[in-house]
Each structure stands twice: as structure tokens, then as C-alpha cells.
Length: 326
Ligand code: ADE
Ligand code: ZN
Image (cartoon, rainbow, N blue to C red; front, side, top):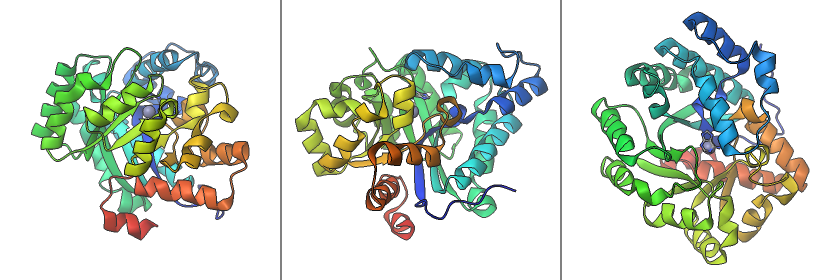
């Protein structure tokens, strides 16, 4: 039986997690064997031992290699279910899960298999596991934006049950503004808008995500602290920032938790919440991120509760549902 959720941990929403980044090594090898795929490691322990990253790109290389195990609708369903079971144990009551449609299309996996496998589990998550869920399609910023637009049209044409769009993958040299038409199309279709910005890119990318993409939420956003005017603006507008402190240390965006801007972001009055990003790769699901951050900054019970409340406030849930969670 799963471990019970520790009662001292506040309930929270997980708003920044990449489904493909939840692939545990054991499951990766199980799926690879089932699908006749060879992973470039001799077994799960060797793969886990390779989880030492120089930067975002070195992680993305391994993340992309791991995805090769995922081929069928059943694989995506199994991955989704495994993540949700672990998330419930972490005290997550609501999860907004991103997936990377282009990564799978590029490997010849049909969009129907990807979306069908994920959505079939998500639509039953509340009834089966007591966790509400929403799905976000994230586009690769290091690919041509025309490809993202094409995939978005395909998702809309198949009535994929997505709540919104995101922007991820290698950030440096790939400013958000290139995706203006994609975000405009998503907004016209009634989708919600989030974007990775300021993970490895400058504060100007955060500003551009807000001004050009009209992003409602920023994923990471660390570099905002380099621009005091922008901080004042995101505080005034209470723009949600989904920060992943353990990920940022593991990908060397910052040298250590002690040097992470999270305390400064909280101190400034930003609507900031903490998340996992790609939990097995960084060795921390969101409960473990909470533990690490609490220890590193000596957070009070009230500060932890404020981070958890911000996770619901920053969600794409209807306001009445947010209130019900708070
Ligand atoms: N895809 C998965 N994790 C990511 C991250 N931390 N940054 C950008 N793209 C990602
Ligand atoms: Zn991310």
C-alpha cells in the first residue's frame, strides 16, 4: 500500500511538471522491453546514475532519450497513472500536467496515441484517485514556430482536452516573441497561456512572454529579480510564477538553494509557488521540494502555507474551485 500523506504537509497544486519528465527509470526500462526499444544504458541504476547535469541542454538530451521508451497509448496511460499515484502521496490535490506533443510526433508516435493515453487517465483522476487534473500542450521553443502552430491546429481539430499551452525546451537564444502567432491562436481558441521564461534566459524574456505572448503565468522566471521594475509589475498584477528550486540547482541555473532567488521573490510579494519540473531526474517530487526549501530557508509554517495557497491561486481552475481548495 502507498505511504499515507504526512498530515503536516499542506495540500497543494502541482502546476509545473512535465509528464515525460516523470518517467522513472524502472518504468522506462519496462516500457522499452515491452516495445523492443534499446535505451542507451544497461539498466535502471545506470540510467539513474547518469542524472548529473551540466545545464538545461544536458538534461534535455537525456530527457529526450528517455522518451524513446514511450510508443503506445497504453504507455502514455501507464506513465500518467504512475505519476498521479506518486503525486497523491506528495499531497497534491490538483495537477496541471504539461506534455510535449512535438517530441512524440518527431519520433513517429501518433498524436492520438499520446493524447488518448494521457486524457483517458486524467478524465478519471478525480473519481479514481481523488486528484483533479488539467492538461497543457507545451511547444518546443527551439523548433520553428510554424510547426507549433500546425500541431496546435491538429490538437484543436481533434478536440484534445487541453486547458492551455506552454513553451519549453532550450531557452537561450529562443525568445518567446517568436511564438506570438501560436499564442494568439491559442487565446482565440479559449486556451489558457503559460510559458517557460527566465530559466536560463534574461528578464527581457519574461517581459516578452507577458507583453507579446500575453502569458498569464510564468514557469521558472528566476531572472525577473534582475529587473526591479518588472518585479514591481508582476507583484502589482499578481502574475503567478511556478518556480522549481531543486530543478534550478540540478540544472545549474543557480549554484545552490542558498543562492536561489525564491526568498527574494516571496519577500517582494510575488505570487510564487514551488514545483518539481521533472521529479525523478532531479531527485525530488513536490513534497521533497517542499522539504528541501523549508530546510534551506527555515520557512515558517505560515510561509509554507502561503506557497501552497499560491499554487492553487496560480492554477487554471475556475475561481470557485480555487476557493474550495483554499
Ligand atoms: N522540459 C522539461 N523540463 C524542462 C525545463 N526545466 N526547461 C525547459 N524545458 C523543459
Ligand atoms: Zn519546466
